[in-house]
Image 1 (cartoon, rainbow, N blue to C red):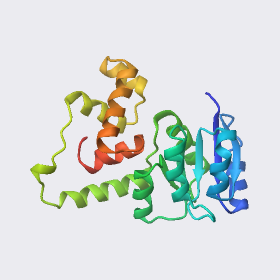
Image 2: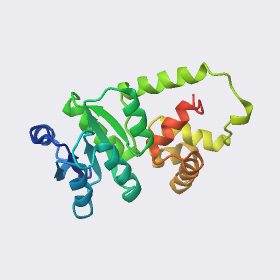
Image 3: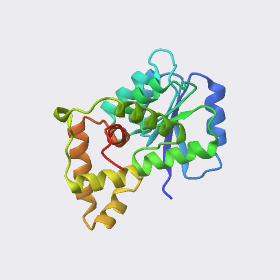
Image 4: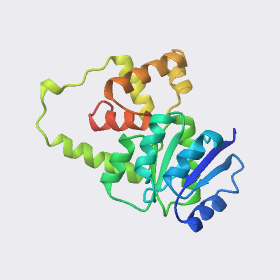
Length: 216
């Protein structure tokens, strides 16, 4: 498996070192940048060129929310996995809709952190049970609101199929094989849907699809 370059931003040095040490057994993960605040992280990205960032939220100078939004805008090819102590669903929803590709709590096991890194690198997002519960809760709350025909979202059958496979965590190559189309066509459809729905990344697209009941 290709080596995934990872950066970590957290103002607690002991926690940073602990995460790095816990992932050392996995030879496909290489840490290329440590930062104690969002400002230092942003300043180091161009030189370190990480594929994935593990992001704390509460940090001095530039917090994780600001840093995540900045990375989404300046470095859209870099994936962000939030690693935070905050279980508040408002943080989860806000971060996932504004550039984060995954959200983990700081008590996550090293195996889950590794899986999140690999999933966002290969598929563009990582949704664990914690985030899925929040999605389902939001969807259930939305269903209590009377529907409006004026706000109906329409997509083609092909777009719906691609969206369904994306939500099932298939890669563009796997989707292309299943639908007998080219990977480039899959990416084009995904990009078109992201632009139409205002999603910043694949995770945001999945959130939008589930929130609006566009997939089964």
